[in-house]
Amino acid sequence: MSGSLILINGASSAGKSTLCRALRDALPVPFLHFSLDFFMFGSDVLPRTPDGRIRDWPTIRPQVFGGFNRCLPALLGAGNNLVVDYIIETPGMWQDFCELLRGCDVFVVGLHCPGEELERREAARGDRRPGDARRDAATVHTFTGYDLELDCQTPLAPNVQHVISAWQARSGAAHRAFPPRPLHS
Image 1 (cartoon, rainbow, N blue to C red):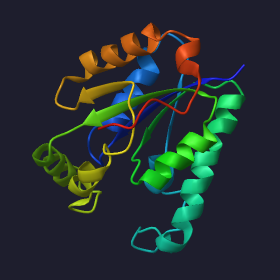
Image 2: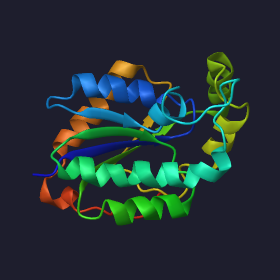
Image 3: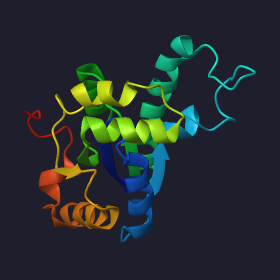
Image 4: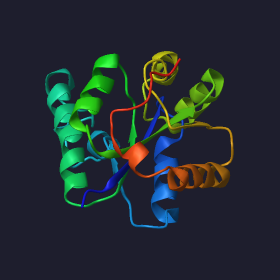
């Protein structure tokens, strides 16, 4: 039996990882949190320069993203439920997700965050390039259809409950066939 995927899409620093960890712990059935951040910010996965930056990132980026994406159907096919945070940056990335996850049970959540709040969070983190979050926010929600949309400024607990309630309320077979609904407008 295949697992279910809850995909959280939003700009860098919108709170996707925080939401995913909270969902992982609150969902009524076991879910694994799986994230590209494990590769990007885990110091033991990608090759690093002496000062800690990812070495040869422009060269290895396509393979890292492609490998991560191909892990999702494999993990789902083994029966794992996944909650995944991601920044779907381009229509091509969205199309790749649609092709890789065709026929899987996928619930897509858009996490929105105002530009000023993204910049504040980005600066507070200190581990992101300034401006990335605002750049993401300008495009990340322009070509993806959503089952649910959230505001990052809503407290975490209500957002977690919104996701769980909406995910549970789906009418089974009608939502099990991915790809999705019409593009977000």
